[in-house]
Length: 157
Image 1 (cartoon, one colour):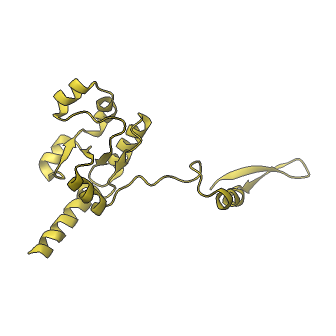
Image 2 (cartoon, one colour):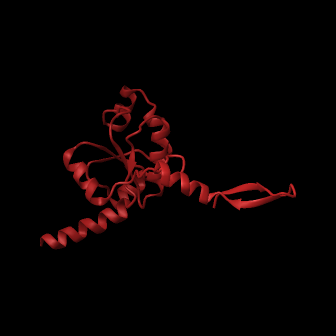
């Protein structure tokens, strides 16, 4: 909860809520970025559509051993979370050599994924801080992807 310092007539400080004031601003001006977060997550269906359109670079930020053990979303490339910041700042030749992909430009649409959305959110935040303003993350991660894929396979049989 946000709080503010209120000085009473006695000159003593009291703690009061600032939320009513913010609520008033929000209703007058709409959602300000200072007070509301912009949705940057994609759903399973949105990710599936983006992958089909080939309009994104899907980056799986799990450790390599996790991908080898569990599998990966088709079309994704692996850049472990602890390498994301460095990778996005590499020169294009080094990026291509290390990840076998063309380095994304800052205007490209990036989507990060992991097991369940925690690391992908961190990777997205890192990318945005480096100027990749179209970065998003798939909060459902590998766990959700597998669940939906198995469900769709059953429906097709």
